[in-house]
Image 1: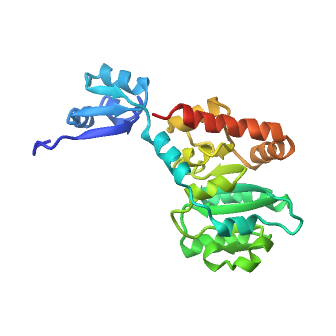
Image 2: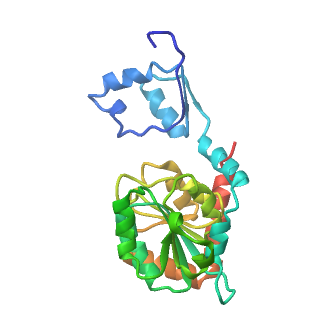
Image 3: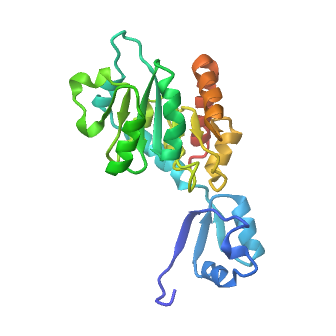
Length: 262
């Protein structure tokens, strides 16, 4: 601002509980006045800013909708995933992709995976340091392999594939029938749109309220939030038993993304 450099904020979202809008928030609120223009996700954000005298605001939605649609168009085919999904019986398994998972997430979806031999699991942990990978492997009772150590000739014999590298998750979701998004038992859920764009149901933990797209996915019945293992079990049991419910939930998720593009 002091040097005359124009500053814009894009895809912003504002809530009444943020520092800017508290009785002690005037210094923080002053920072908002330094933006040449604020492009916000929703009407609620614009109205809140207007109430505090900030009027150089336009509602333009969230650019991530367009981004994930672009990513879907460019999604790579991943031969190692195709090999992993093969089975000796020739029947394609139900695949759950657990993206950006944390230990609190793994503690509830891995036990379910153990009880369902018809499922295969792809885990892309949020952190891929050695200790986290070892803790995941210690929990697993079914055959598993890290991507970095996988051999093409024995991938089909594994039930769980651990993705210990970055940059693949957005392409991997295309191979799942169900997505579990991590972070909902900690700081807050990670990117739900990366999975929803493929038209598959999305599941996440209880801490999602700060993310407008998660709230709206729930309202659209394209996603479900769970608080514990029992809720996850009830939901996954229904997905596995009721193909129509599985398909409709996925369709709702995909439509939510495409309808917000542009």
